[in-house]
Image (cartoon, rainbow, N blue to C red; front, side, top):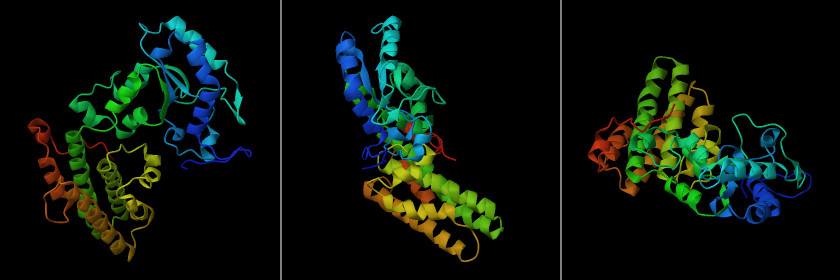
Length: 328
């Protein structure tokens, strides 16, 4: 089980499980009995920011914003008016303060509500700019991946009309040609930072710039690996944790961690330069297995342009190759 923690002998339970159990115990009756007239327009679950939405919460996570609770996503006022929404909020706030040894927070978390009643449109708009998740090409290319991940992560326990589930499914992953454009940009960033600039910085004896090159290479590599797996990369502090659980190229976790956590002195330089090439080789192998690069070399820049050439839409293909790059 991921995100496992132990609390006061209550066994193993992460935040998502706690949320679902709290809903099953108290929220189900609240929605399906006390507010049954609007239940068909309501979605309930846990999604958004916070490690518990990824299943990555642990004892350290519990020093802030951790509580038994869930989100109630409402449609627009035409279907659920403000008076009813306020009554539902009051009813949610009156649910038991403690559950399975955990207490609900007295203070709102920094950055807004993580539990309770929220307009579905506000939740989605705050993360992608459009309340229904209808995104333009520019939107797809420019919105940070972690922001899209916050719309589709977690779990929906109940969805009366299926609208929220429909939007989440629509935003589950980039359209394929957008994915290729973003891959091309991150591959080029990898090549520039790792295969080109790292040793140039070392030869100038600028170890700080060399480490910046490694950081940029690693960040771009993480994005590439998540894109190859058809998943959004989460917020940076969870990227390495999430990498371990990917089906493809999860073995790059240790070499990428070594690259950013080791110095650039002596024999370590040759080790890191070789590791950069090894990471590139693993990724290139996957690009060719997927049939999206025809380049025959270990030069990431050439593979970046080859991936870009596989984009069928001429307008998208001819945009700057970095059009989808939102990394460091």
